[in-house]
Length: 283
Image (cartoon, rainbow, N blue to C red):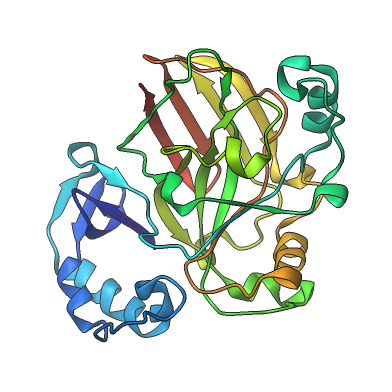
């Protein structure tokens, strides 16, 4: 199943090039009271809500996806966990390019660990990446992103994939500089997720997914998740050593070589095998 949010917060199931409105199903979510529990409210109740969503999609008329404005598939992730320099060739280019490293020593993911991005940086494919720091280079970074569907702490690698609800394309936009990653990657609009969440059963093993990114039709990045330094199960296990992972939490798995600047007026096009593709405007 391919789940999307669109047009101000409606919930839809994407089939082919049509979106089927299942927003009414959200009435079955239990009421929230303060303080709200950790996690995204829909994802906290995913197991009981999924059959209702699938049944509603069968009844709903379709509308062309091209006619709607796509939001982030996850409305309220408790945290966005990201993996730095998790492809060897990106590590190599980061060490060689002063436009990326700003004279600082680039270490490995084993040295840095994972880091957190602000949830306020989150947008969807129908929104616009805002690049307005004229004195700074802002780069695109395509990544496989995943959504946690089951709470876990200190998750074993062999159990890790059972905690995944689905996968998305992620764009980890980055201002270059000497500040901490969590600052430079957390500006408003700097986390793009979309175009929809593909449930884990449709993906199977996330190893071996090819993906690519172009800017205005120019090829920039192309790689495969088989080249991750820490693969998806390893990342989930690693992150969960530090953080309890709650349903709706997002993990971004890292970007390959080919990162480069974007400017207002550009269009970023990203695709990942089995997940889909999306075009995102830069303003």
